[in-house]
Amino acid sequence: MESSLLLSLKTLLAPYTAPWWVAGGWAVDAQVGRVTRQHDDADVLVLQRDLHLVAATFPDVYAEVPGTGERLAWDGVTMLDPGPQALGLKVDLSDGISKVQLLIALTDGDEWVYHRGRRNIRRSLGSIGRTTVDGVPYLTPEIVLLFKSRGLREKDTADFIVLEPLLSYDERHWLRERIRGWRPEHPWLHLFTPAASE
Image (cartoon, rainbow, N blue to C red; front, side, top):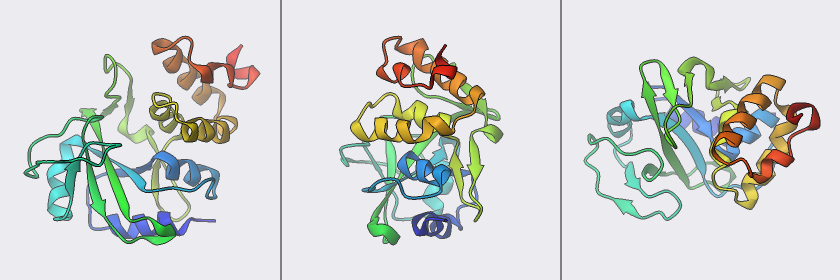
């Protein structure tokens, strides 16, 4: 059953003509098909190269430091750095959500580029998302979990436990190898299903 929040995001972002994907915990819910936990906000991934379109579509958008809410000066044109900088929108959506955080993704041509590390983790833009039955785009679960593997907050591990059984063999392998590549002692490596971690 489609979450009313996901449908609200689709309506909110309908005027925005560039690609976007639901990210974070709501992407987990989009994959699972139900709300799995309480959410304080909603995360949406947009492309760095399209930030001028974000500013043109949402005049009230503001730049901020993720996690702190500290606002940053932004003219709507200057490129922002993925990771330490994001965009915020005050909204009045269903499920009590009053803020949408727009996370920023790097691209290289038609490739998505993971902004951390040596920036050598890449996927074609056409392969980083899925769509719900009601047409809401969201990030694939292995990419959602790659982002969450850095934080290791309680909710990130909870999301991993919910999503990991739903990954295909190839998705598990892709995620496991990328986590192992930067942190061989990562606690999630012991939580993968045995068939995927042997």
